[in-house]
Length: 454
Image (cartoon, rainbow, N blue to C red; front, side):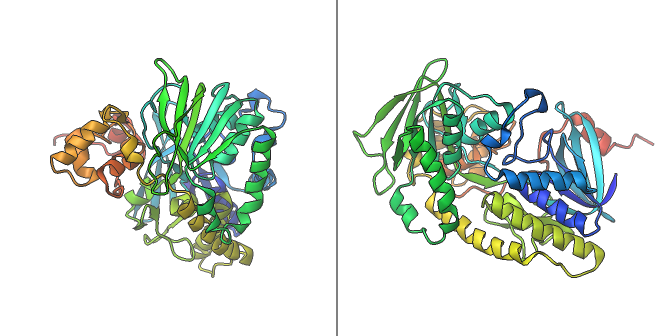
């Protein structure tokens, strides 16, 4: 299949980019791994579930309807259930390599003159004693179950960690009938107050969530963190404790909550695998882009969470700007993004920076991780093994990986990298993974067949 522009990712950024480029006369193919467009933010329940009011689980439903209707009315070709594992540069553009369907065994290719990466982000997972028990899920995972499957992970839940995602997760679970025993947030009100001006756009939304939590009588514990999850075969309770001004747990402040679900999250990280494999420059953990959302690789744009975690509204603005720029460059004209999108991007990036500064994991979270706590679940590497590697002279994440195998498993460090880096006292290193997801050897063999002997 050939096209002018391949947009990878059908979340807010990808949808906005595809619609903007299509409206300017460019052939667009939108590629996404999910069964339906929408991404994680606009995740929809399967039609067979017969959801009567799916909008009850969403914020910004009218925006989703506008995007959905625009996609249906336009000429964007949407390829769902396409799991992209590599984008290859070719003499005449790019080839997007994907695996089809749930089994991810059959290959598919899209040949495009340009590529726009809207690959989103993924949750930061920090370990603590008991975090591998059944019943402990990520905050985003609990939300995905609710939005996509119309199911709840349990009957009595604690929502914990840090970041704005905890608010919609706690209110969503409470609205669905789950008894939310507590919302445990490690950030305190004083820290948020320092950024009140930059967060002005977010205050009405936050106030709405706070009102719903109050209506459902959900207690909120600020400046608290999870110390331990309890249970044998599955989760039965959680101990939380207060944090001091230095970010350390205050002795004697532990509180126990009986629960069968713990939804925990500590923010998000940009998904940069495809960008890194193309050689795009990173700015910290995110893909670096210019004012047009162009990367430093000619013909490659990026938008949304991949360029920095900032939420759906920022992703929409960046996607629109990127789509306009890509269409203009392909047609040899000047980009014409809506002025409102440019203003929104500036304002929302300022809010995103404030959010990132205000909602940060406790500074000394690693001190609460006991030696027997598993850090890398794929390879069953414990915190004690990581600390032993540090005693042997390891001073960075890569050396710890070589000495312990942490990060060498199925997820290739996507889940454990922040934890390993935190225990090692260093910043997470760029992954530089050549493939964005596991690929069957048969697909690789067909992709680059070996020549037989002459």
